[in-house]
Length: 244
Image (tube, rainbow, N blue to C red; front, top):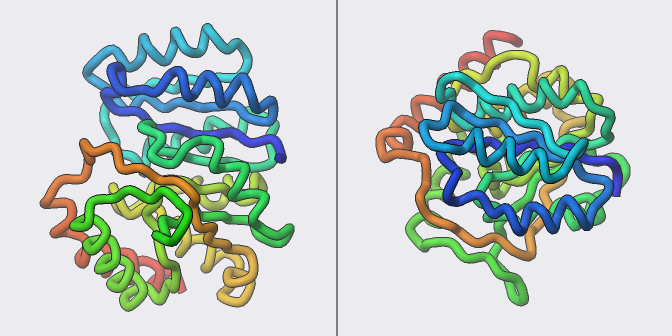
């Protein structure tokens, strides 16, 4: 596995952060480092992250944001901070580790050398552990259909919180703030397609079916965020059409 820096955005995670699982991941994988982004938490998340950093010297970065800015901006800030480190791949995961950290190696090993952006995909199939509420699954499929129709992006699962990005793309993809709070994964793809062109985009993007993904509940996405999705998709389409 190539050297990988994993960005994990955290909002009020002092009681939920899976420290044992993260410690095992860091201790067992010398190729990995972690950059936690405390997204303006109102609890003791900052203290917990600093303690964890002290337990793993040199392997953990902590970035404290003064106010809550949402997952997309937190990941973006973590990605920009990561450029101070040496690594080959930038990853990001959700703080609850619905996708286990070890899945990153499977995602990389399942790809080919030309793949520069690798997405985890929650495809339910025999022999794997994909645990997701049925209602959220169907909402997700509806969203994917809308995204495909409005943005002409043919991917099964853009919203899974497990991604790998080649370092040479990080600056271009994360330099500007995202337009939307929750659909930044789609914006990232639109930026990439605009950067490299449709044919190269199809060649370097890979969707890897995960062997394990377990919904942990307590979603940060509110109902009104879901209702705004069609508007936000149209907003993204207009912005990228304007950029040409």
